[in-house]
Amino acid sequence: MMNALSQLLYGGSCYWIKGFVMPIDRDEIARVLKERRAIKPCHRCGEMQFTVLDGYSKMTLEKEIQGGLVIGAPIVPVATIACDNCGAITSHALGPLGLLPKKEEEEG
Ligand SMILES: [Zn+2]
Image (cartoon, rainbow, N blue to C red):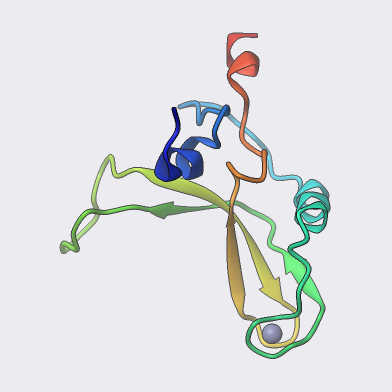
């Protein structure tokens, strides 16, 4: 049974596999976001033109704020979208979008 956090981290039936290499596919990200109806105007300026940035990001989840870098903190892999007009940035977790590798793929 997946809770909300593991859904974000692992994408439900999907798994984030250590060492797995997944090159970014900006067209696929744009296609999935459109399919999921993530197509509303920019939340800051109201414009409609966006760019899928050419690289994934990782959001770390930390139970408390500390000075310095936390090694081994859980991460949420995200695709990052920027408004072409004002530069506002929006992150979308890859797991719920079905963009993380599935367990079957790991077992090959
Ligand atoms: Zn904007």
